[in-house]
Image (cartoon, rainbow, N blue to C red; front, top):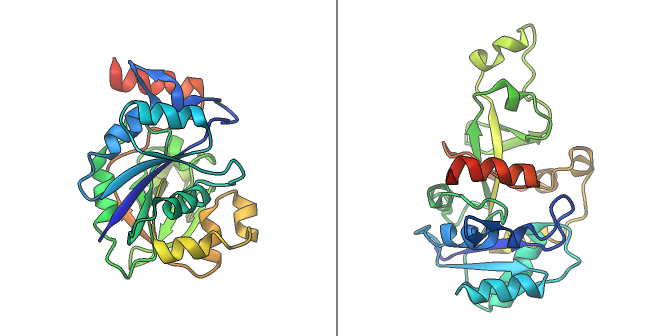
Length: 246
């Protein structure tokens, strides 16, 4: 399988403008994501898909590959599809790698790539939840899996609800999964899902991936032990810098 890794990177982030270019221990955020991603052995190529000339020139300056995409995209998925088209190369799958995870490990990328067998339409990562702070945090999407390790539903609420069991006992009584937002798309499926209108479940939960489920696409889940360490705010940056660079 020929797999293209794409790192979407916007300049005008609402909560942290220009975060792709912020310095983290002598390297920019986007350079760190890129350098970690190219270590994934299953990726044939890695490119940054940006909407800003400053990010484009910066990536080219440190020796990376990048393409310009529209400023009008509403999601990283849409940006990935435009970038795929602009590569003018043939790939079987695209993996969408979050541009705000400067310390992402290449291993979970390879784990996700390992299930891309041609039949898989879409795939993503999940991690077993081991903390009540995560379990009951509505800012952390959860996933329910079926027996084939396909996602049945994503929600910001804690799912499933354990009836007649005290919430303090939930983690001992059931395996809950946190969603980690790295996506793999078969290229023909990527082309189709970018044409779908916003769905009712997507609006309700503000989770783009529900649009795909609601339209009948199967999303395979890969369980990983690696956690996500995304940077959405300057406070997040301080936290991950202390964790990985101190």
